[in-house]
Structure formats: C-alpha cells, structure tokens
Image 1 (cartoon, rainbow, N blue to C red):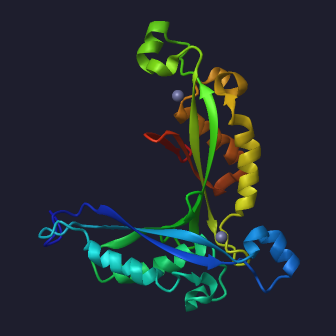
Image 2: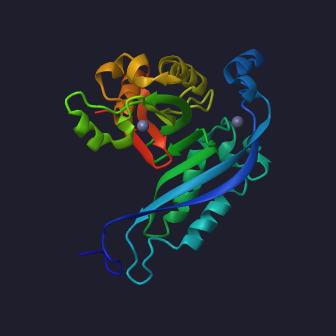
Image 3: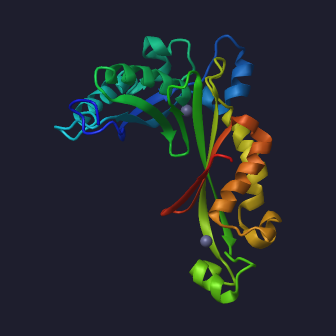
Length: 280
Ligand SMILES: [Zn+2]
Ligand SMILES: [Zn+2]
C-alpha cells in the first residue's frame, strides 16, 4: 500500500541547518524610550548574533531516489530564505519584518512562510522551523496558528546517589552500578525549559524571557545548583534523584509558576543521556 511511486506512506523526517549572522535592536516606536529600555534592557541597543535556522521536513520516501525531498533543493530554499537577513540589520530587511520586533519568534514565523511555500511544490511538507540566536535561546514554529515554542537553556551542578530503599544493597549495586556509590557523585546538568505562547506584537516575544530567567533562577537553580540532591533538597529525601525524577520535579515547580505556558522540561545529565517531560 502506498502512494504511486512512493515506497510507503510512512512519513520520514529530515532536518537541514543553515547559519547566518545578523544584527538587531528591539525598539518599539509606539512606546516611550523609557518603556523600551525597561522592557528590552540591553537588547534595546544594536547587537548581533550568529543565527542557526533548522528546517524539518516530512514526507513519503520516493521509491526511485530513496529520498523524501532532494537535499540540494532544501539547501537552496534555506539559502534563499535567509539571504535577505545575512549580514544585515534584521528589522530593515524584508517586507514581512516591517513593523515586527526582530525576535527569534518572529523570524521563525517569517522563515516558515518562506520555506513552506517552497516545499509546497514537492510531496514533502515543512513540519518544524527552528531559529536559534545562541546555544541558549531558540524558537520553534510548527504551523499551529499563532503558537510559538521558545526554549531557554540553563545549567547547574549537583551531586546525587541513586539508591532505592526498597532494594537490598546488592540489588542497588546491580541496578545503579557506580551511581550507587555511598558518597555520591556529581554532574553538570543541562536544563532546557520550553514555554509556548502567541507572539506579543508589542515586544515580539511569546514569553518574556527575563521573567522566565527569574522564575527558573529563584525556583529551580537556587534549589538545585551546587547541592547534594539527596540531602539538600527535601523532595529527594523520599524520591530517588534520577534525571527522570529531576525532570518531573522541575516540571511541577515551574508548572505552579507558569501554568499552561510551560510546554517541556529537558534534563541532560551527561552528553549521552537526556530526558524530556511534557507533563502527564
Ligand atoms: Zn539579540
Ligand atoms: Zn549520576
């Protein structure tokens, strides 16, 4: 069973990246200079980023070529889409950016429109457009109306010992290995917090990142950073501090502050292990 000429109707995802450099400045002329400086802080000054754009396409695999879409085409679509922004001041580039704040949220939506219209001529369709302005901040748009997903990356260092009270010492050693070491061991954890929202036309943000930074700092990093999870964090006196449980704990703490705006919590224990939690 399948579409004629296609191996199967199972969609295969492929992603392609493109890098560009651009300058921007957050400034809303409808508001006073004081409002702009208060709202945008140092981002109200002209500064630049090395941006990465990643397009994820999905589609059936062509029976002859074995490809979802020709990567050479995708490469060209991305090159064309970002060309007006490369080595430019973002807000003075394309007609679509006119009147929009130069946020990764708005860039993701503008680039989505440009690339998805190219993909329309093929059997592949754009399913995700990600724009990163640094390793720590990126926006993703998936074509869901006005909804944009924004991720901020944090880190903290903590020690822990993996141990289940219900198991014997021998069983604990079996299950947790070196992680059961009685004196514990440590990790530099990576933490990704994804919030979702519609873009505020006044600021260009789906969620004010300085507010997110404050909440994560007060409610998560102050609690976990440079701590012994088993002894310093009351929650983990009862609960084994695995990364799975850490992700759920961080979700619960942030959910109480962010409500429906919270979309995802990702915990990276080492370069080889990462955990994601989206709520129940
Ligand atoms: Zn910036
Ligand atoms: Zn560990």
